[in-house]
Image: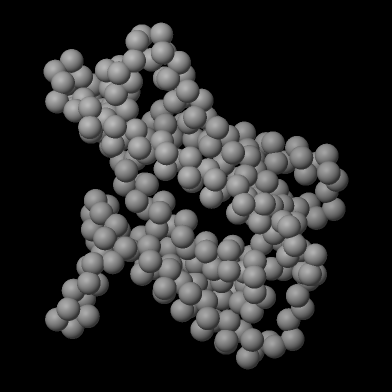
Length: 252
């Protein structure tokens, strides 16, 4: 094992590590539309008052399109927004299905599965994720979406030691990585809860000094510290651990 990932997942993660920076750069370009909306002053235009009242600042980019382009192009732009939302959602659903199949189904449920069975399990898991996402959108209060986004940032960074760091080192013990992840998620969630889920900037008190810090980073530091300590303990208790990975698993 490499950290908490199976060897078959290592190559997939490293391929995604090449693609994701380009996708993030594209998202940065899309974010410029928000600055354009501010420059155009669409929030102060009376014809868009009802839209901003109903949807808040999320209406800024649609208002920018309605203000700046003819009706036929607005239709194309809105269709592009819908497609742009579906693409990353589909990628995440497919990735979730693959992760479930390779790391849970194939490892623990059906180790001797054929490629056909593995593919079917991945499709079913991906469909289940899509259905859960649809139910979430239909029934979950939209006002709480930003709160989950804050928590998502705190939670997802806790996978850094188990996923990213473990691609380049075999030192961490799987139990240490799991314990660190759990400590990071719990502590990060508690900090967000203390902030009433309205902010992710946690005031760290060091004596008389108060330092505002990103809760995800504080939780990540605790995550790594716990992972290191538990790894040292596990290596001392059972030093003869067999690593099943080979050098080829670390190559793209």
